[in-house]
Image (cartoon, rainbow, N blue to C red; front, side, top):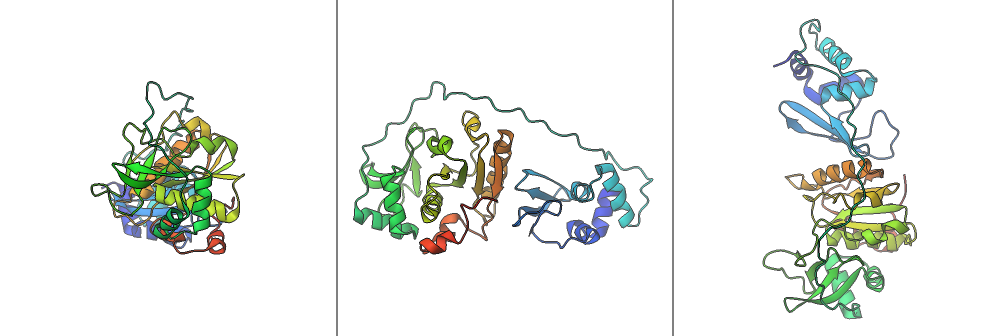
Length: 327
């Protein structure tokens, strides 16, 4: 074990380091070197003997040494000396391989086209009838007025998949279309399916990005309905739009990234999965978007997903969550 790791462990890991810095230790916490309104940072479980922190707003992170360096405004080498002195050890001994990190310069993505991809064939879709609106609203726990409005705006449509009545989540590009059964049943064990031939990683809603400054980026069409309902509740159609990733394991295609340049993107990840897939997906998307020139913010849920948060809430209650409030 290196002298630095020995010192960190002697202090008690991240908790001990935070104590020495005069910062209360918490799993989720406010950035100590930036004035944020909410908790944008998180300590994650130890890996290879190191506890890792991540800043969802800046899309950067590191171990206990990096944290001390950031808080004190010193180099990593100086941070190592400080930690070793805190632990009562001799920093004049060799610090195995400690060196300052060089900044990583990420290349700016270049605009591209979908190439030779062929768009999926979408079944004939129609506007949802009042009874169908009520069914979707009841399943999702959202106001029926919001669902009706989304039908009017072409966000959802009613059609059939494998002979079963479904509601389809789509945008005007037609590159990615998702379907869910209107009766709430499953498709061979899954809640939603992507149409054959669709570009599954395409963010649904990308067609509306150019017309607004701010976006909610969520995972899954269920949270897509919830995010659009938040925009409906705040009557923020002219300022905000929603982009939906089909799954947390997917990355935003390089071809799409230039469209996010100069935009404010608020990511609302799924929280609480043992694999932390939702959180890791949010980290990946934040890094991609910031490299593309977007300003990124993360709305940290207390647990579950956005649909869980808004379930059963009325228009005024949805508005109080501040999902469409800029920083």
